[in-house]
Image 1 (cartoon, rainbow, N blue to C red):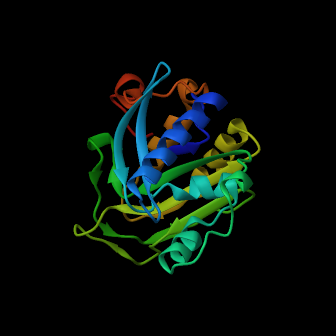
Image 2 (image 1 turned 60 degrees about the vertical axis):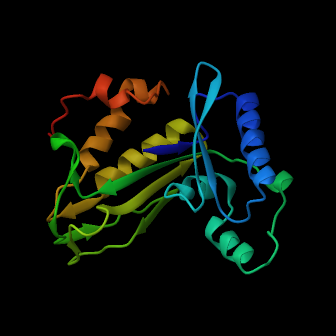
Image 3 (image 1 turned 90 degrees about the vertical axis):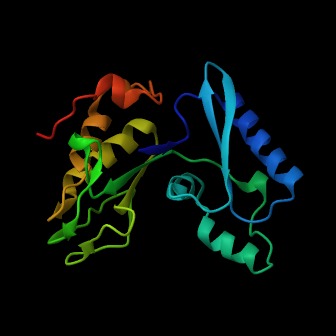
Length: 212
């Protein structure tokens, strides 16, 4: 589950970490899509890594900024200029992405192989689905088991969660085990709703999770 803006950062902290990432990119002379990742704890940021590529959670950024990052990435690779300036970018509302995987959350998130007999896509206001599979496709052992990225957008975090929760209810995948029920329980958990997020969330709140 990814979301933006982060519910644990203040506006000042968000601007500060953004300036750190921009300065690092500028000093390296890097050109193209890239992501600098930090861990955050009690007002302090710790550099983790840089990915010199587009990230799988890029739809979250696209939903809250209205910028098509893939199109801009292609323009830059083709030697063209960006179609916007930094001061033009405005964050609007809140977005959440749930990665739908063919995996079993009750067995340590082991991949689930087999044929997808039915894949029903959700739809509705503020809902986006990026997927590379459809009904009849085979989930093999040779690729990452991600099936789709389900993204919701709303005027605030609460509405984004509500829209995502409904979209997960409306998503049907038959033939392989998925993590859909697990993500529902994550979104329903009061600590998630309160924005109390940390890297030990699953171990602390859902260590012995089982499907309904």
